[in-house]
Length: 171
Image (cartoon, rainbow, N blue to C red; front, side, top):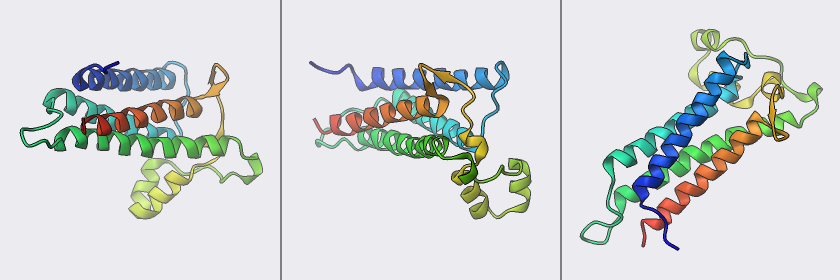
């Protein structure tokens, strides 16, 4: 069994990223589910994956150049894998927070605008990545899975996709 062309797979991955981001915006603006700091970081990871996939579609690098190298094709796979791995780590952290007792969770954070004005970047990022009680709240489920669990599955899928593209460029 042979896989479809990389360009088609990257286009499909890009479309999936767009659909996931549209779902997130629908949930925020029409269902009233406000994103927590970890949710926002996950959205950024989906944007980065989508932009990487779009660049791969537009560039359409050859799996191998005339000298047997696959630098650009492999680079898109590596970038996709890295962004998806980052997203999976953040979603995994949020899933972990959701299974912690409420009394062990950190309190709510000040607004992002306030933190950007007052805190150094390093401290602000540390607070954002640590998560809060807001991040542990399960306000919606699909097939018994929280939003964070659904996005974790999506990030794992994108990580596998990126790894397949890396090793595919070696053929």
